[in-house]
Amino acid sequence: MRERHAGRQRRRAQEFEAFVTGAAGRLLHTATLLTAEPADPPGANERAQRLLTAALARTYADWDRLHGEDPYDRTRQDLATRFAREAWRHHRLRGGLLDRLTPQERLVLVLRLYEGVPEEQTAALLGVPVDRVRAVCNRSVATMRGTRTPTLRRGHPRTRPLGAAP
Figure 1 (tube, rainbow, N blue to C red):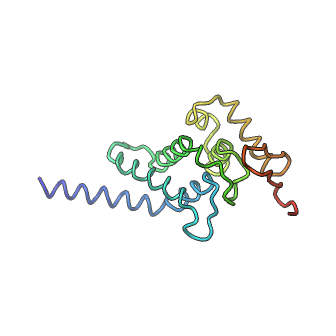
Figure 2 (cartoon, helix red, strand yellow):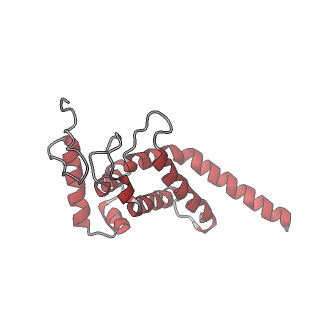
């Protein structure tokens, strides 16, 4: 009995390790985009690493209950949910690629364009109407293209459009 349980635990750990080996890089990049932290130098994205670690821990805890569900989708969903819950911590400009966007704009933009999650699924995940997801995504793209002046947030300096001279 004990050997069978140990064998099952080893197999579970190996399956999860294989999943992490294949998916962790992309998931960490997703988390880094969400937190608007710089990716360089390595280790500069502490919040992203903590978010990903928590999401992976939840996936590992639920591993046996996935029953054919895609572990990547589950982890991404948990990552997005955790980020949304902690978004108030991610307002400060940090020098990351998407730091010009609000946390909600980053979340929608990353899910829709980087991860390719359909509007309907993004809306369901965030608990907002599809029209809201579409509007936030369009606004985010316009901001990143420099065709929209970013909104001023309390305590945040106005940022320049991409490619604008300092």
